[in-house]
Image (cartoon, rainbow, N blue to C red; front, side, top):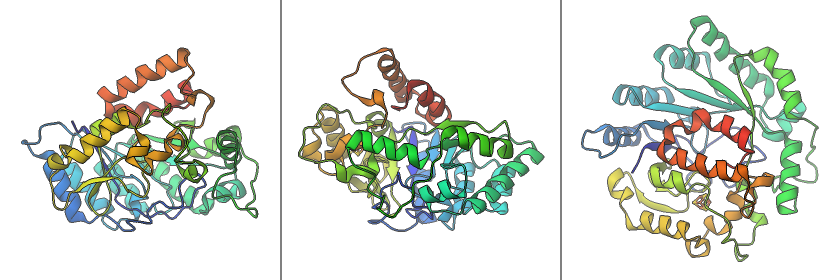
Length: 354
Ligand code: SF4
């Protein structure tokens, strides 16, 4: 069953965040053509398609705004599937007043997420290598127009300060983050400092959440030969109900496969339904359920890096929060389109495993 489609509209990104793999977008480094998006949307919208696709994530594995057809793509989805939710994660570096106007007036996006990972230029830029002033200008422009037009497209802020990330990686892997060089400065910052610095600017109606990262940028710290069979595939529920499409049309395993290495078929040549039913996809799901990661190969052979980096990600721990996480995972499998709307609140409450 497919309920949601994740489109990597671009594999590029102007940021270089400490928590994103440096290999991301290196294998398929271009943008998704409009013709391919139309083919996918047409098929999902067709009355002959067996399931109701009710969500698109357009910021999958890159910054969608770098796709020159970004607005045209959103308009096409809206025209063909007006009830489908459209979710976007972006760093706002490439956001423009024209995009604000189109997105708000035409209702092109259902929910936006942005990371603000430091409370000042030094801490933000050390983590993301993006100019904070430009990001804030674009973000404030969007929020100002949103207030003027009184159109509530929800926007939420996730926060993952560099100091916190370094601490989590050291604790989990025993090594500093792979992207951290000896000359990288690690300016102090915290969730509280970020909220104190930006909440008055952005407004009370913008929620801030602690981001709980997983270790996908730290796969080099994991030995594929070490026994990892105790770890679950964190995306199994999504893999069963969602499609992950790279810019060149490959349907790939999941969003943590940043190089889009495990592929099942190409949508330039096949239909969504054909790839959904392909032996390769069904075989992967069976192997993931059986925790046969070594048989699958990279990146699943480093499944330890697919786990959230928080204390309760220990798969042997069984407590009330573990029980609630199981319930929450079941809930996501049945109602996957609510995932983005509620995940941050749930993540905060549950301590960050999902
Ligand atoms: S084990 Fe493989 S499929 Fe599962 S989350 Fe990791 S990369 Fe994705």
